[in-house]
Length: 41
Image 1: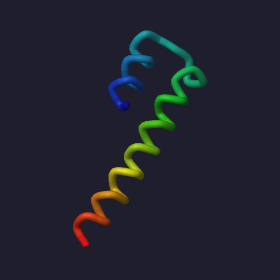
Image 2: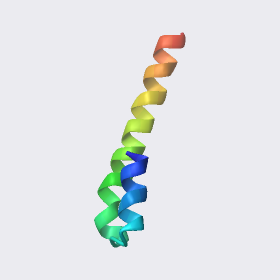
Image 3: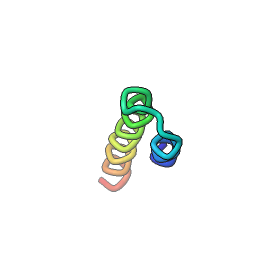
Image 4: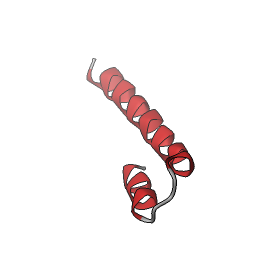
């Protein structure tokens, strides 16, 4: 997801057009961290 955001910036999309990929990146990061914490308990 982060690479998708990077590509959108490289092809000069506006921040508004790139925002969904950044939001999904942050959601995936949150889910991954929560899942990791559940597994390691």
